[in-house]
Image 1 (spheres, helix red, strand yellow):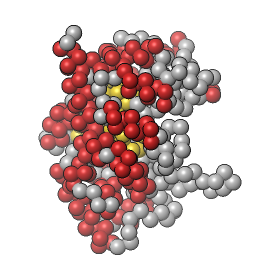
Image 2 (tube, rainbow, N blue to C red):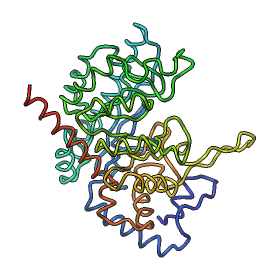
Image 3 (tube, one colour):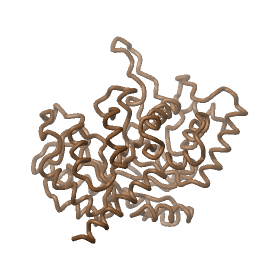
Image 4 (tube, helix red, strand yellow):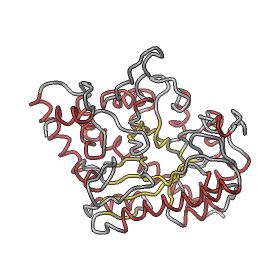
Length: 376
């Protein structure tokens, strides 16, 4: 299918040109992107599964399934055990644990129900090995520690269940940290903990010992700085935007980008429209069109210029609001590579952006954990 047709379907009736109109040039770049994807380990660092997910075997209605992943030549992804923040009550925690269990089962089933095409990965080496076998690597992450309640030992329990990437918050404060988006409906107090709570501070060394990769997306600036002051390993912002492009509380400032670079971590620029292009004027009656692949790559280019090629990556946030014109599902992942090629990035650069940097940082976090354990 020609790229023009792909983009037309992606944006429905909204004409948002992402690529040049030269069909021959587009086809050449798409062929080059496909060849590159054969050789690299393209990895999406954050996506979700809806609670009514019917499985990954068929090419279905959601933005991720195995047919789409293979069509886009994606080799793996971190699938999030995500439960939105709710009331911090006995009933609320019980419901959160139940929902986390459901989400975990859905993620495990991607591999277990499709063992000839997918497998769970517990390390970067696992990801590479599974990809080399022609299978899809499923990494289990956990976003929002709400289901953990206020129990530090739950970090160990979720590690035993296979979680290898963990972020403390989503929208709303919890017992572990302040969120960059406190929720009025939950009667959140901005800067309730002044960053991390005492529990959250205790959790950082334990996450280090376990070799779990700490996800700093969604944290307040104070909480992010505290994580970086406490951690003995590099971190990831698994799905974040650039505040200099869109001044949203969820996005990372230049200062935060630089702090993550100094930590040795990686910022995964997310394909979420509201964090990539400014919203329409308040008086406008028309909804804003989706952001484009070009605007996603604008964010990547900005981050690379600020903190260097070794500290930037790519995330979709699919099935939770993610998706831009040209990359509306995992089957269109190569369109991101086409735009990277259009901007002059080399295959080596693209390999780093499309997962190489994430896997390196995750590996460093695991090695740091082994080092801490050997000194105990």
